[in-house]
Amino acid sequence: MSRRRAPDAVPGWPDKAEAHGRIERALPFLEKAWNTSTSWGARTILADLYGWREPVTKDNWRKLDGIIRERADDRAWHREILKRAGIVKACTELARREKGEDDDFLAYASSGVLHPLPVGEFDTALYELERCWAGPPAPLRPSALPDAPRSRGPSAPRKTRATP
Image 1: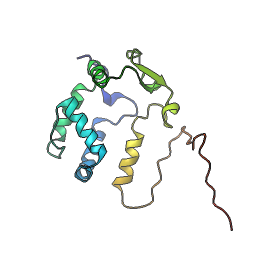
Image 2: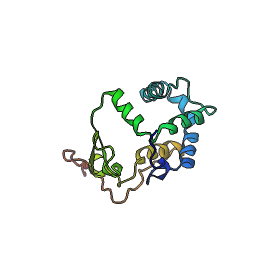
Image 3: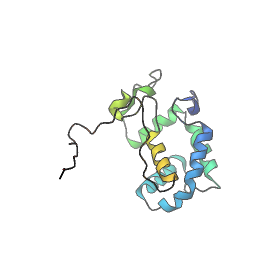
Image 4: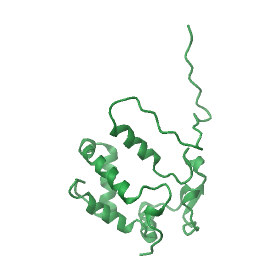
């Protein structure tokens, strides 16, 4: 297996302790989401890639986490996943280019082109979902993202309220 730096060393990624804490906080909600398309997709991916066919529970998630982490930095495994899916070329953000080892199958774009996030901030969307669902019912606004102006898009008109 070809190894590179550990996922925990990537700027913007949660370290192992933070990732495990987030998983533990999410576990009570998995049963409630069992019949959703997202859950079905995740179960299909876990079965196809890792042979995992049992529900994820508080008693077995660490075993699954270990199985996934074991292959997380294996570049040959990354390529095998793309090959199985029939993907010849994929696009990701420029911050993931590193030394260009994967230039043969990855194309790159600056962070703002793919999504309005600061360079190297990989899991903000997931964090926002966790933050909104983990707290008490209250109006929540997305976290401020410095250096990442939000846009309505080129064709989205600005909504205005008529005055009496």
